[in-house]
Structure formats: structure tokens, C-alpha cells
Length: 83
Image (tube, rainbow, N blue to C red; front, side, top):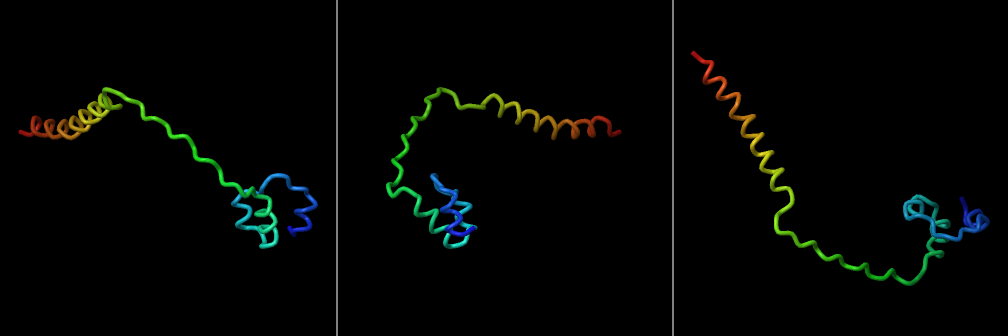
């Protein structure tokens, strides 16, 4: 695509950054010329949610118990079955 072809398409919005990276230099230059000169404003900061308990404490305890049972279960079975 050349600048003339891009200009004929009457681009009213900027081309995506990925497309600018792989475009020929003249098309990339044309696409950059369509960008606004003002930088975007700062995004509003979100407040962290205050909680009394850490999320996932019960789930973590269950995972620990399952892991311990999967480790000690076969070991105890071997000790009991062994003559």
C-alpha cells in the first residue's frame, strides 16, 4: 500500500500500532500524521477494597490438607500393609 492508496481510502481514524510497524515507511508516516498531538489524560486511580479476611484462606487450607493427605496417605498405607 502506498501513501496515495492510503490517502484515497480516506482514513479518518489512525491505523493500529501493529499495522504501522509492518507498513512501508511512507504509509507509516501517513498513519502517524493522523494521530492527535495531545497526550491522553491520566487514568483515575482505583481505591483498594478493604477486607477483614484475606481472600482464599479457606481454599488454601483445603489445598494444603489435600496435599498432606496425598503425601501421607500412601506412606501410611505402605507402613500398615508391610508385614
